[in-house]
Image 1 (cartoon, rainbow over the protein chains, first blue to last red):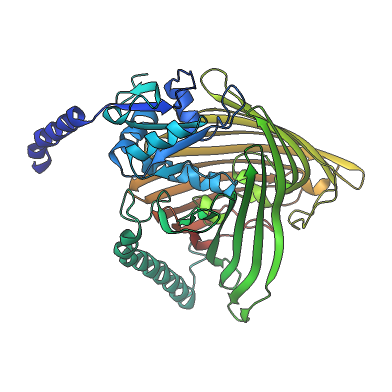
Image 2 (image 1 turned 45 degrees about the vertical axis):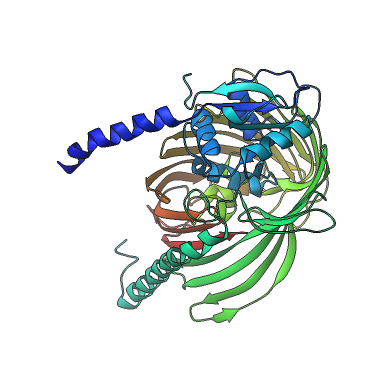
Length: 144
Length: 374
């Protein structure tokens, strides 16, 4: 009975959260002309795909786990929060593969990506500027 | 079960062991708030993402990230590892408690296309055996050591000692990275855990997935081979794995030809992995036959894991193991238990192994472990 009473409140909160969630954009260096879909992005951030088409190593950059951008990115690409990838990265660690580096703010991600042609990151859409190129827009949930 | 729990002293030992595990759970819970002050993560403990500490130095920041080791500035060097304490109470055997080893994972990536990786194990640290007392026989040996040249996703050339790429479990078999405190029986009976030689591997991306291939050979004498099963002299093998990460499934197949003393055995295997929300399914099928008699086996295991609440999982595995042509014949094994991973760097497991009968490969019993990744 208590659950029934709380259900409308929970639905309302989820709806409000959906409205509040800002669009996430995946950004690369301005010199890199690429268009990426969700599969490409997932493979890059899982370090399954490690090289750009021109042979340069890909340098993916994460926000800290728990940050709004990281969690929105994770939900959009992996359909779950960042915690769901812990087991994957633990296993990769055993194989000598480290997860992407993390930066503490969207501004730091933009600065990093703007300074390294190999880098790829993601930020809330309002934080992207002309120093980086937008390679994909993520709505917060994947439709495919 | 009844046969195993037949005396009060045995019950007392098991209760004591469960109390030890419960104490571990409580200890980990108590340490949560303190850890959270160091580096808040998704759920209050160091997440493996942020640096727990960082120290400026002439080579760049020296940073420790929980469960990911210490990164030494811009040198490309990262040093971490793991350790596990184990408890085993196998039927007909004395109780064993061991801090078996510290394993160090050392990665050196000086340039983007080349890396050196090694796993060094300081083993035999301390072991208590009921009736025998405490024993310590420390030793250091090389679990893995290889260099790898990576020119593109589809072309990586590895040289050295590495995990034999058969199935899924053997690629990442260490305690902190699996969900049960005891391995499938096939891991210790069918093939050499490591290869010492050369491997060509890579990944291509067809059909919105990742197709990974391995071609490898043991072209030199094995480096520090394990003794179970008795090692072979030469091997050649291949593996294919197709993964659709976004759909949460993956399938693979493995082949291995092994030679010992001029005689050959041939192994074929299929494996699969699937994730759906809190549910995970893993399975491997292995068949090996040939002139090396102790390698003739058939094995099938299926393991399910369900995360019942955050961090706590129920795990169950069914395995049918058959030493072909042996008097032991087939054994049906069931492993049931639970795992608790309150943080990426800590996992505790407890499980019970059941079987329809006991053989030289299979014993019923209680197994527990506490693992730390650093």
